[in-house]
Amino acid sequence: MTATINKSELEALLQPHNQLHVLQFWDELDAAGREQLAGEVGSIDFDLLDSLFRDEIDQPDWAELARQASPPPAVRLHERAPGATNPLHITAEAARRAGVAALEAGEVGVILVAGGQGSRLGFEKPKGMYPIGPLSKATLAQIHLEKIRAIAKRHGKSTPLYMMTSPVTHDDTLEFLADNAHFGLAKDDVFVFCQGTMPAVDARTGQVLLEAKDSIFLSPDGHGGTVAALGASGAFDHMRRRGIKHLFYFQVDNPLAPICDAELIGFHILAKSELTSLAIAKQSPQERLGNFVMINDRVSIIEYSDFPDDVAEQRDANGQLVYWAGSVAIHVFDVAFLERSLKLKDTLPFHVARKKAEYIGDDGKLVKPSEPNALKFERFIFDLLPHAERPIVVEYAEEEAFAPLKNASGAPKDTPEYVHKFLLDQHRRWLEAAGAHVAPGVYVEISPLYALDAEEVAKRVKAGTRFERSEYLGAE
Image (cartoon, rainbow, N blue to C red; front, side, top):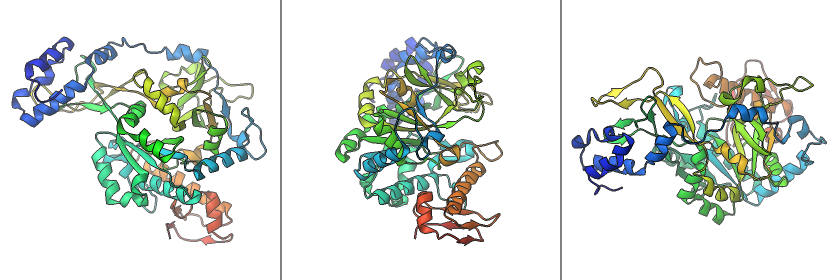
């Protein structure tokens, strides 16, 4: 669709779908505004949108599937202990060696999903720019990129970052990275690409909402759009040039993510898995995490909102949850599998979310609803799981892998204070394991450039060292 298409042609496209309201301010728009609106109209699959609104696209009966499910193939936390055995017959030591070898060969890259705004935090900027360091005020993005620098230094090989933004965060993210010299990463080690969008529609009528008189309310199409966005951006070409075979995937709001953990990567490689997922043990049956399950001999994730209580509450003979494995959106992908998945990008199911969305009303004024008024349609990356060969799940301790920043202060969890505690507790454990003493009420934050993990802390901090005042151990 281009600016040369006139109003009558647009009307002919919109009329069969009851979407003519999109053009109600056409006569008020200048040439640039008309071009923008025409381009957005032309990019939308209105047949698909109609089907999604009418729920004609086949949606799984998740409750029924859950009742047919079984637990996934997994390595539990205690099975990763030295000398322990597990169903994969792969020791943690062997996995670490395989992961280190891949990192030292430069075969591992990172996908960082960074399309979200910090609106729920009262922070109207990309969430990656949120200053989460308890003492340093380092941003989420800084912590992640410094971890990647530290990983490259440890293994003597650079680790490229593929950072997925959204239309609302893309420009700000590029500017932020440039202003901070990409936090020390080389230009060819940072590949920023933008995910696609889907229109939001009125929950009552199915009509698309207008964000402005010259633009449709478009939302990111979900993490399931990662594959299509990688393909469209040329990222796969970059990976081939760099020799990248495996990708560590995580989300920007989790500063505890064990980026490129050698053991996780090694389990993935030695199991010949195409998609390996990190899981944590659920603390309660209804915990708000996706549930890893086996359905028809394929690993899947069923969202907590679709997981029936009678299944979630099942326990084994030892009183443990049968469906214990909670998803924290950390995966290892084979690049070859993702490239093959390009053919599947249009077959992943859409998930529907009811949200509040501000929009332009018929009078041209901004409407701010007090209740959810819109339907947003997203695809999820985990829906690739049933298509992967030999997928596995590996359990990690929550306190070492997952502390997402999602809510403003005052919420029960996932707040800045919640994340601060997880980070500071982790760093205290590292210091005390090295034989250091951290006085009560004293907080020590450790930059990834000072030490990436407990092993490096033990090399940097002498046993018997005392920390009597709070401090930030930064790069030297």
